Every structure is written in structure tokens, then in C-alpha cells.
Length: 91
Image 1 (tube, rainbow, N blue to C red):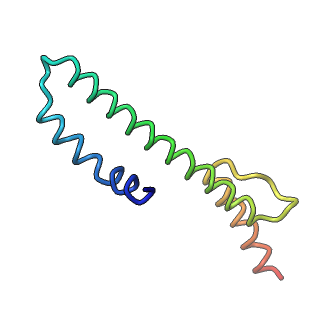
Image 2 (image 1 turned 45 degrees about the vertical axis):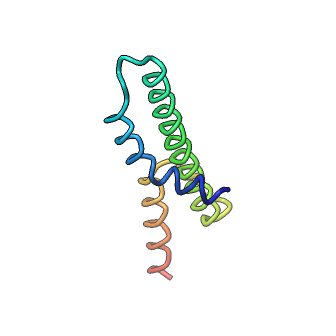
């Protein structure tokens, strides 16, 4: 069941495009159904992006030393790498 849903989400842009061409704009049921499907798909994409962002922060914050600062931006991570690189070359 999960695999079927993942495949459906993967093909959803093509499905939405075909439905856009086929929807009867005078039929309120078609329009409301299409907009509902479009907003649902958008919500799924946004939630996947936010989940990936949270996982990225968790993954790279766990890799840093316990006493170091949290990473909020990519520049913070680059600064942290530069600090580690400088300490490695000095020793």
C-alpha cells in the first residue's frame, strides 16, 4: 500500500497536468476536486521539504562535537568545517 502511494505521488505532476486538460471548468465539482487535489499534493511536497530540512539539521548537528554550537544555516556549517580544518592542520 505504501509503495502504491509513493508511486502515485511520484506521478502526480503528470496526473495533475492531464486532469488540467480534461477538467470541465463549468462543472463546479470538477473545479473543486482539481483544486483540492492540487492543494493536497502541494501540502505533501511542503511537508516532505520541511521533514528533509529537519533531518538535515539533526544529522549534521549530531556529527558536531557536544560543546559546539548548533547549525542553523549553511554558513554556520561551513564556519564549523573551517574551524575543524584549521585545528587539524595545526596539530
